[in-house]
Amino acid sequence: MSGNSKRLTAARDHNEREGEPAEAYNDQNGLKILGGTLWISDKIWFNIYSFMYKRRFNIDDTDLHSDAGISHLFRNLAYVSPDAYHSLLRYVRHTPLKVYGDLYFSTIATEAFERIAWLCKHKVKLGEYKIGNYGTNAFTFIKYILMSCDITMLEACQLDLSDWYGATAGSLAVRAGIPSHVVQEYYNVMTSAEFQRFFVEYVPTRATSLKRMKIDVNIAGLHLPLLTSLSDSLEELELNIFASDDCKCEDLSLAIGQLSKLKKLKVFALFKGSCSIYSSSLEEIDMIDCWNGFFTDKCVCPSLKMFKCMNTDKVSGNELSNGIRPVVPFSEEERKDMQAKKVVAMTAGSRTFIGMNVPETCIVRIKCELQY
Image (cartoon, rainbow, N blue to C red):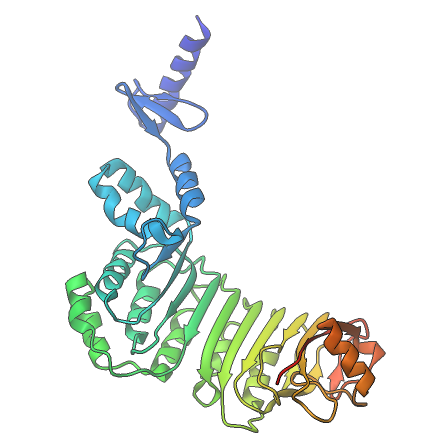
């Protein structure tokens, strides 16, 4: 028996075991010939989709040739090949996707809603979720996505927790295929507080792989269990926070201390105030983007390896602009040297900073900018 005959016999035996037609021929690379037609395995299709579109699905991008073009492909492939379309459906239920976009409810609103409806109808597996609700109350639709899609492998999530009102997009959502009961909830206006309570009750027990989170929120409106409920998984946290000047952020400090696996913390505080950070797990803190005048009163982090902050010539008293303050102010000569170098790095053991209790080997990285 020739080599080809042996391979064909083996393929037939394999197909019979797998319940496939005996006349099918399976190649080791995933190609299959059935009835004279070349078929491609899901494995090959999955690799093609991942390579071409980086697993990204954008709800508000109308450019077919952008990285977000997969969203157009999803909706149009059925008209080209039903078999390929079903393969793609299996792909989105198997491979975690990066779902991005903003719900502005402008001229692209109908198309955005159609894509949301498609995602939810087919129970797409989410890997990253970053949808902004700028200019409208979109919490109802964000809740709909989280409840309808598969979030068991969700690793990154971005939430804008500001309350927005004024946009009326319910009719667009209905025409796009969003269920009427979801749209009715939209008209009832889901507040940020209600959404945060839903998130705490629903997401942590299902998205056990959630490691990275970015939150935009007014400190006064933050429901702290939103953070503490993720203490078993969260490793990176980025906070864009708003508050009145002189806010101490005590409750937020306590919540951060309960995140036992947190490795990286980035804070963008748009006010002058302070916070205390107590964490046994944190390895990096980034406060470069905070407003001038936002500092840490206490930083007790025995595992810290890097602390990033800013220095500008705008601040008198020879102290840093944000982040931490030296016990002994920088001299004029030191400040000039820092401005010349743009970025300065020193160990915590080489200089004493107010309230800073970290390893002496921790690097304090200071970005220096001259502001007029």
